Image 1 (tube, rainbow, N blue to C red):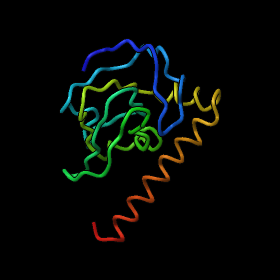
Image 2 (image 1 turned 45 degrees about the horizontal axis):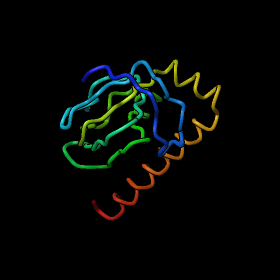
Image 3 (image 1 turned 30 degrees about the vertical axis):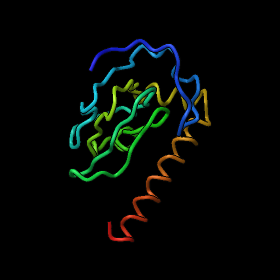
Image 4 (image 1 turned 180 degrees about the vertical axis):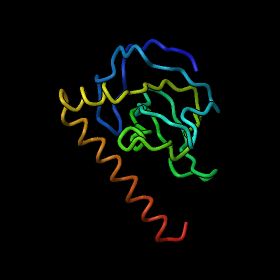
Amino acid sequence: MKEFPTSHARSGALGCTGLFDHEPGAMLFEEGETIPEEGRRSRSLYVVLDGSAEIRSEGRLVGTVESGGVFGEMSLVDDAPVSADVVATSISVIVPVSEERFLRLVQTHPSFALDLMRVMSERIRRMNTHTSLGF
């Protein structure tokens, strides 16, 4: 993981074009590198500016995140340990968003919160479908 200067952000699941332009805390992750590790504490939401990652719980693939997507939102909201490993599947530029930054984003860009709730809702529905189908 290395600090990575950003000059632009891509839109995606959050529809957050421009919100993370020139973000000073962007990090570069190599393919195969674990970003947050299951069971560890994290008080950040992560935004994928470029690249992709797999979300794995107990070794099982539960999702993927690509440019414009987010992960880590549950730990930011409930302060519980990270519930899954997230592993970069390509060289990836990731921005950690602290609780303080998250609260500022919600105040200045209310649609950011709604977009994040949509992402969380989609993930819950997908997990419910997989559970009901016996996956």
